[in-house]
Image 1 (cartoon, rainbow, N blue to C red):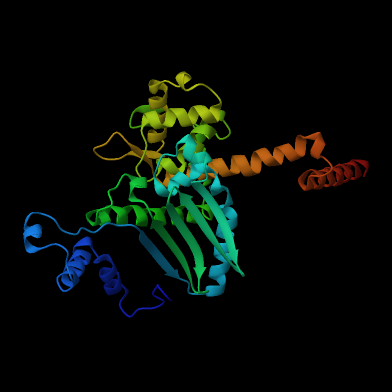
Image 2: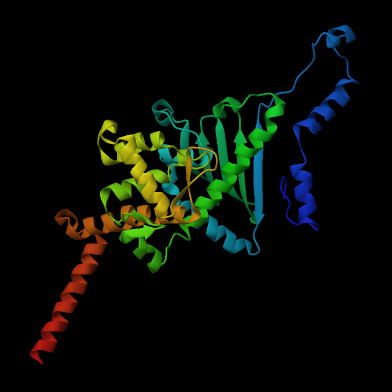
Length: 343
């Protein structure tokens, strides 16, 4: 498939070969040919420490997943694009690249998402500064996810080739993370039992933990913050959450004390929504926590608030399809009840 594998007799061996491409091998290849080509540095220069060094001007890390049924794969990818169109908000672009988005970056176009269609083939493009993640339906057979890093300094990594391993970790982590988020958009439900546990206080290992009631302003804001891009790959600290939470609640950051934030983190931890990263002061969402946060946020923002607005806003009573359908249902129900009472 051009620059991807469609099929392979030994996928594990192919993966080992791919993983084996290291900075050491690239440097050895470079030195082999440098020894045969005209060289401006004399032996004396090289002994004095003057020599060529290699740098990474661009590094691309890709994953190609081949569909068993290509037609179904295209339908799935188009649905993924539709469900994740809101990821273009600058504060969310950070999920993939694990970088904090400063205000200037968030408004200058260096963090954004685009949907591009070439002919009939759509593709999803996510940008952070000079990094670019692209996802598309490759040759009608597979899902291609690739992250290209064009400036290593965007991730506080040097340009020398010895940093290839660190860049590989960043690039592949970005690929995996966007796939996780896309998977969760199609599997974000939680069971009735799990949901019920969050609605009531509980005792966990002898410790009292308050509830996380759906729809409560602070709970919704807290869970919406936890799924922001900037908090995912490297985890998050108490001090990172306070300014983000204050923005969603519309209050001053000074009104959210470190102690109050610690109480929220304790509550989330006892409900098993977050966990502390070993040997650090950082936290991360558990798989259960990520599903729950996405479910709470999307149902509340996309379904509940919007639906109730259409039902109760008099300005939308005639134009909103939900309000019109509900009025028909109510009229039919009233007629049915009146008929039964008369009988």
